[in-house]
Image 1 (cartoon, rainbow, N blue to C red):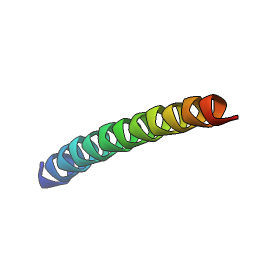
Image 2: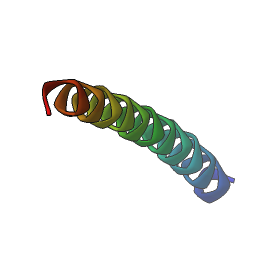
Image 3: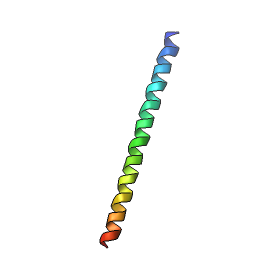
Image 4: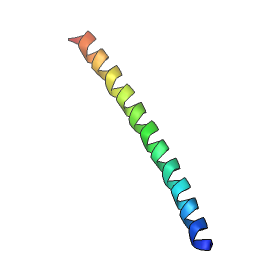
Length: 43
């Protein structure tokens, strides 16, 4: 049915968005760790 096709596309889009969100968070974590290392070296 059209309804289940819509739902399928929605869940695909949602999981893709979620994946990108996780990747962004991971990049952010790495940047924070790098900054912390730099701050430790300075002090």
